[in-house]
Length: 87
Image 1: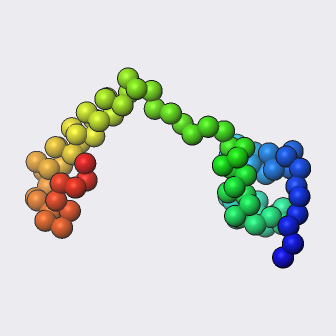
Image 2 (image 1 turned 90 degrees about the vertical axis):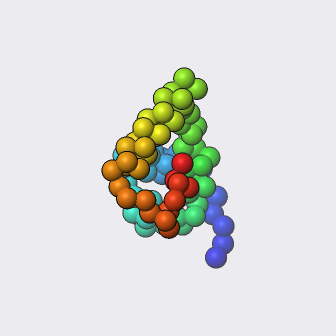
């Protein structure tokens, strides 16, 4: 199978269909005749930055997670196969 050179505009449009319009990667792949592997690479390249959790929220998230876990630990019987490795 040969390699095709697609323009950046074409790649951005494909990523836009997935990220903004909500189409499935497989659907866009079939419609455009591009491999899903290529689409995932383009999403990584053109999809924008990864969401970043602000530092002041990290502590809040940890405390909420701990509160939920301790609630369930008090309500649920101990599960030896899982233990406390969920934190």
